[in-house]
Amino acid sequence: MTDAIAMPTSPTLDDLSDDALDWQVVLHSGTAGAPERMRYQRWCQLSPAHAAAAREAEALWGDLGQTQTAATLAPTVQPKRAKRWGAALAASLVLALVGYGGWQQAPALFADYHTATGQRQTITLADGSRVTLNSASAVSVNYSGEQRRVSLKAGEALFEPADDARPFVVDSAGEQVQGSGAVFSVRQIGASNSVVVSQGEARVGDHVLRTNPNAQALTAWQRGKLIFNGKPLREVIAELERYQHGRIVISDGPLGALQVSGVFDLNDPQSLLRTLEQRYALKVTYLPWLAVLH
Picture 1 (cartoon, rainbow, N blue to C red):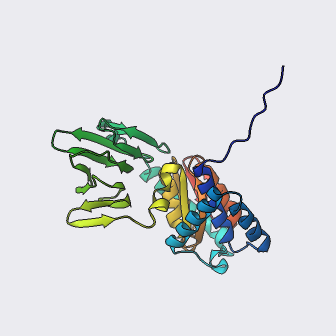
Picture 2 (spheres, one colour):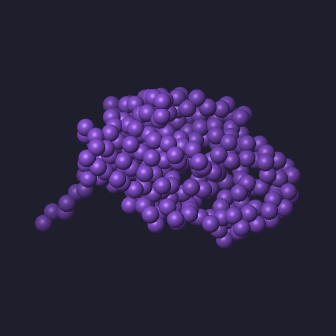
Picture 3 (cartoon, rainbow, N blue to C red):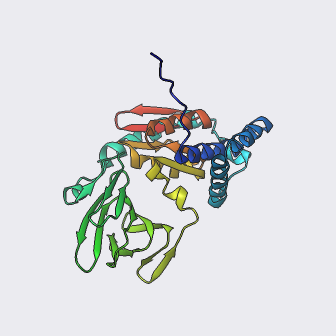
C-alpha cells in the first residue's frame, strides 16, 4: 500500500491579489530597502499570474493617490498623550454607554435579507441578480412585471443585476439608483448615499455615474479586506467600527490625524487594532464594549 502524496495547490487569483497588495504596503511603508525590493521582483517573476497581480496592485495603489512619504507615515506620538488620555476616556465611556446601541435592529425587522454586525452575505435573487450585503445591512426586494426594485434599508450592498429587460432600481435614503447594466454598490451615510460604480454606468436622478477608478479598493470589503492608503486614523477607526460590536475611540484630536496605510483582514477585525499597535506605536485599552486608542 502506498501513501498518497498531497500535491501543492496553486494560489488562487484572490490569494495573489491579496499578496500583491500586501507587497505594496511593505514597499510604501518607508522602511523597505533593496532586499525587500529584490524579493518583490522575484515574487513578480514566479509566474505570469504573479506579474499580473503585481501590475493590478500597483495600479490600484497609484489610483488611490494618497501615498505619503516615510516622514508622513511615521507615527507622530505626542509625549504627553499618555498623561492626557484618562480624561478623554471618561468622556468617551459616557458617550459609549449613553449613545452606543449597536446597529439599529428596526430595519432588519422589516427587511427580506439582513446581516448582523461583522457578517457579509451574498444573495441570488429570483432573476439571477446577485446582492452582496456588507456588515449590519438590510434590503427588501419588490419585483414586478415592469421593474426590479430593491430597497436598501440600512448599511451597504453591492448589486450585480442579471440581464433583463426590466429596469433594476435601488431605493436608498430617498434616492433612486438605476443600474440595469452596471455593477455598483450603495452605502447609506446618514441621510445620504455613497454610490460606487465598478462596471458600466448607473444613474442617480439626473446624474450619470461611470466606473470609479478606485472601485476595487472601495469595494474590497466584499472580499473581506479593508484597504487604506494615507488615511487619517479617525477615518480608519470609523470604518472599523462598522464591522465589530462596541465603540472604538481615540484619546485626543491630534492622534486622529495620524496617517495610516495597510491592507486589513475583515475576518479578524481585532487584528487591525493589533496591527495599529505594532506599526504605529499605539496603545489600546480594552473595556466592555469599548476600546480606547492612546
